Image 1 (cartoon, rainbow, N blue to C red):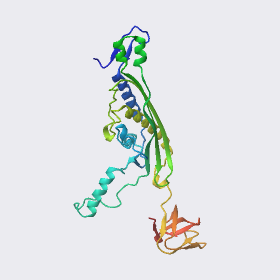
Image 2: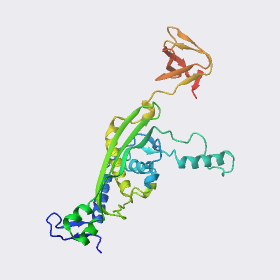
Image 3: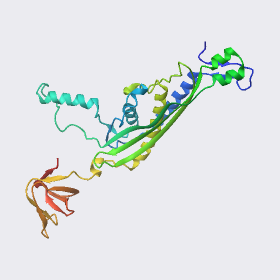
Image 4: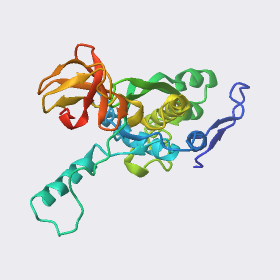
Length: 315
């Protein structure tokens, strides 16, 4: 039997009815491909980003899907808005390699050591607000079969389900230094398809690459993909407000006094000192510097200058 079945019936309501699951699949695949191609591309990277696992329960394995973080990484890579840093399985393997280096088991000159890991400026967290794998499902065979009065046609139509699959998702970008949520976008997608009982139309495409298993060859996976595509496209449009250098744009890292000193009113020492500083005191650099002198705030709100040879980065 042809995959695209035409049923000619005397009723005007059903005349020319086409039941073509592959055609619906092709339309969904084409829509996904178009939206993927429409992801905006940034002219330069805005920093390094890690894609985290969604919080809460593992909802994706029940849908025979891989973690959506793999899907989001594909979008991030295509947009070129960030440099991806691995904080998942790749990080675990990297740490194991560093343990080998620390134990002396690697060859000399391997160039693996401390201070090489790039800091993540942001973390992107994908989440699923809601998904419905079978909402508004209706078997129309009984209704139309009774109208037709034809057993053969009724049996054919009895295998048709109308399924409305929906997904609502959320993407959040958090600044790793300040903990501020700098961007947030929602995505919604739905797909109505005519499919056969026991074998609904299956959408196939190229999204299985990059570990995004199931999103290319399951119906609910296709819908969730479209929702995340919408959310990420909207997210990229919000990124114009992010600084080009996230590290420089954030407050300086706190420092701790390692030797006794004084908080001076001016960098050159004129006008005396604001207060004495003891070992262990926490100070917060403002970013202003004059050679070895740094402008800082103390924990009481006093502002002044201190020699940078007297403190170290807080740990």
